[in-house]
Image (tube, rainbow, N blue to C red):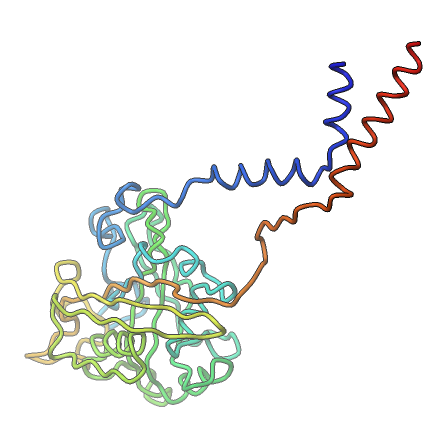
Length: 313
């Protein structure tokens, strides 16, 4: 009889067995660990200078040598994990950039030399992931206009080395002059580039007055692209980057006696996906089998049992 019970179980619809195991497996999956449990300090990244890193990029060929550009915006590792993936699909980082008016370079061609950053994550100096430019309202070709006419742009890196794996995205934002002016940075262009980016990411109509921001400034707004809507909270912090012109690239043109090339503030963006396109991709969906399907194993078991009894007589 035990063998008969086993045979009956084997004849049960495989979909039911799989649905049970799959649903249990799904239920056992732990939720993402909060930052405090993973040991990542607030506001969602490790300070690069705590482990040999820097808040200035490395730029080759500067005069005088050894100057860099301020890393002045951070997308916090406390943002939704899908937003921090470097892709345009599924509401990823590149789609987020487009949602507030910035896109990849003209026809995929990089203009100018790459810069490197040391985020203190054990990887040393790493070349920028990419340079992202203001797209003038056209994500496909607008960055070609920015390359020629100048405008807002930024370079970015992910803090994902084994010694400081926050998954935060560090950005060096600025506002540059046209190509005919060798893409030099406008006066106060690093601080303005940061604040105009924050203005766009929190509200397309908001203009942030750089002279009024401080380490208590906070802005929140929403942007959308390709069916994904993001809510971004931008908070300003002091105490990370220096308030100085020393060592900052183009400091002779971006600063003067009263305006520092870097005003000592960074903007930290915490991004949450608040809506996205409806999709069933990857979702588990189960239907209750019809009564005919449910009864089939019982019928088969009855027939098998009848045959067994007949053979034993």
